[in-house]
Amino acid sequence: MTDSLLNVLLGLVASAISAGLGWLAQNLRRRRRLERVRAFFGLPAGSECLLVVNRHTASASGKSVSRNDVFALMELAALVKECGAQADLVGHEDVRQGLGHKAEFCLGGPSSNDRTAAHLASWLPGVTFHQDVSGSIPELSLAVGGEEYRYESESEPSGGRAFVLLARLRPSPEGRPAFLVSGQTAVSNHAAVRYLVANHRRLARRYGADGTFALVLKVVNPRAYGPDVVELTADVTARALERPAATAPAA
Image 1 (cartoon, rainbow, N blue to C red):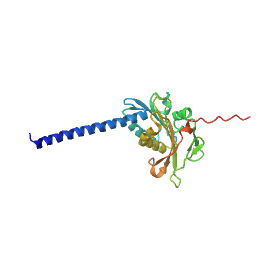
Image 2 (image 1 turned 180 degrees about the vertical axis):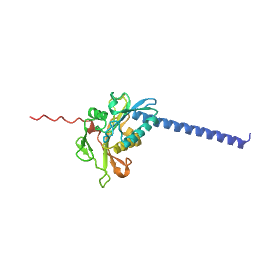
Image 3 (image 1 turned 90 degrees about the horizontal axis):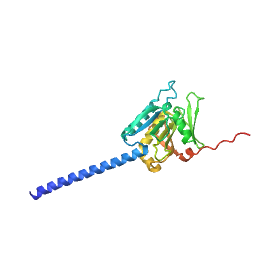
Image 4 (image 1 turned 180 degrees about the horizontal axis):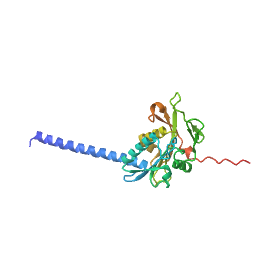
């Protein structure tokens, strides 16, 4: 074997080894990233989770779901599938279990989702929603610790604005987390799901794998942009967890 042929063979072997090591390193990085995603969402491979569906508040049927809420559920289902878990789609009135048994994604405000109302009362007592039905379109205001975030109709010159509470609850480190997406509109629910899917790595770095958080997000000009433009308005975790002081009875 000539020296030139030997050099060619050695070069091919070195290239094959280098390519194999590069593939192995990329595969390990992908697996580590996926394991971090699974840990944050509480979705180990082969596990089950709940997608708790709300009802369409403007529909006479209790089984009707808004189109934007359906889109949000589809994106959550894709996330669950990416983690190698299975999603169980259930109506909000059909869930009869506590937190921690399965990972949970609870969609909709307390007026359209009874389980959201229970979670807020039990775990985020500083959060309140108030529905104003005096106008032609019901408006839902969100308040956290005395700070109010008011809905603005899409008919306004600004194109409107809507707020949504995005929260992660984990009462015990050994339990699975529950994610609340509680918005003033179905578009704001969809926007919050997109924000969660796009920013889960940053949220995991800030709050940890076992942390609880509550964020208020603002959807900007939904008439023009739909659920695509969403901003973080405030981290309200401390105020949301604090139970309001009881009002003293009148003498």
